[in-house]
Image (cartoon, rainbow, N blue to C red; front, top):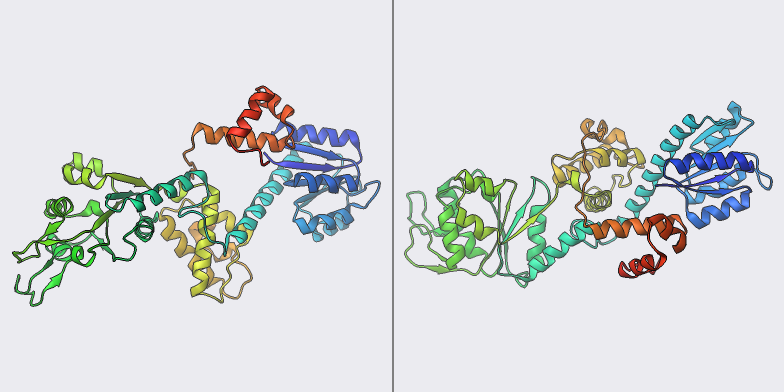
Length: 447
C-alpha cells in the first residue's frame, strides 16, 4: 500500500482520482492549494504526488522544485498540455506529464511505474545509509534473520555443542562458522577449516589425524592432524556429506572420546576441539540411502541451523548484504564506483541468485571493475543473466509467526490513519480498547 498526495484545486476531480487510488488499496491525501499540498507532503511523506500545474496560490513548477530536495516522485497534471510544457516538467524532475481529462487506465499505468521508481529510490537511500554502518545482525535486519543471528549467538556460548550448518552452496555457512567461533570462549584458540569434498579416505585421515614418520613409504616426517592443530579451538568440516564412508566411524570416535591416534602411531592423543560441520545435502536422506552413518548424523545434528538461500530472504536483508559487500569490495577496488543506479539495484533484487552470497559478491566485484570511471554502477555493468532477470519464479518468502504478521499489519494500519486509533480499530474490526492493548503488547506506543 502506497501513500499518494493529490494537489489539485478541482475538488471533484481530486475526489475522483482519490477514489480511483483508494479502490486499489492506496492511502490518499487531498489538498487544493500549493501550501496545503506541501504541508501534506511533510506530514505523510508520500510515495507519489499528483500535482496540478495551475494552482490558486502557487505555480505547479515552483511547487515541483520545492518537492525535489525530498526526492518525491511527481506526476504533473494539467488542462493546458502541450509538448514544451511536458518537456519542461520532465526537465525539472517530474516522472510523467498527463493532460486533463485524465484517462484512469492511463493514470493507473503511469502511477504504477512511478510507484516502482519511488520504491527503488527509497531502497537505494537505505542502501546508501547502510553502507559504512556496522550491521546489527550477521545475516540481515529482518525479524527472521535477527532471530537466526540470535540463535547463532546462543550457540557460540555453548562451546562444547556440535553445530550442523545446513544450506545451499554459497549461503554463508563458512562465515556463520567463523562468527560462532569468534563469539565463543574459544575465540583465542585456532579456527581450522577442512573441506571433505574430493579427498580420498587416506588423504582425509592424514588431514584430520596426522601421521607418524615412516607410516607409509611416502611419509618421511611426522605430520600433525587438524584435530591437534585445532586443540582448544574449533574445527570446521565443510561439505560433511561428502565425507568418505571409511572415515565416518573414526570421526565419530574422536568426537565422542576426544582422543585419536596418528596414522602409524600407537599413542593416544587427546584434543579438546569443537566441531562445526556444514552441508548442502539432505543428510537424513543420505542416512536412508546408507551413504551416511546414522549415529554420526545424530552426533553432528545436535543443533542444526538452516541458512536460507538469497531468493528466500527479505528485501531488507538483501539490501544489507549488498551494502556490506560493496563496502568490503571498495577496500580492494578504491577507484571503482560503490553506488548503484536504481535500475541496477532493481535487477539485483529481481535475480534468483542460484550461487547465493558467493555469486552476489562475484557479480558486484565484476560490476565495480567494469564500471571503473563511472559515477554509479549501472545495469550495463551487470552480467547478462542478472541484467535480463525478470524475477519470474523468485520467491522472497521469510518465515514469520502470526504475531509478527499481526504486529506489522497493525503498524501499517495506524500509519495509514495517521495514528488515529479509533479509525484504525474500526478498519481492523476490533474495539479501540483491544487495539490499545495490542499496541502496548507489541511495543508500538512509540509511534
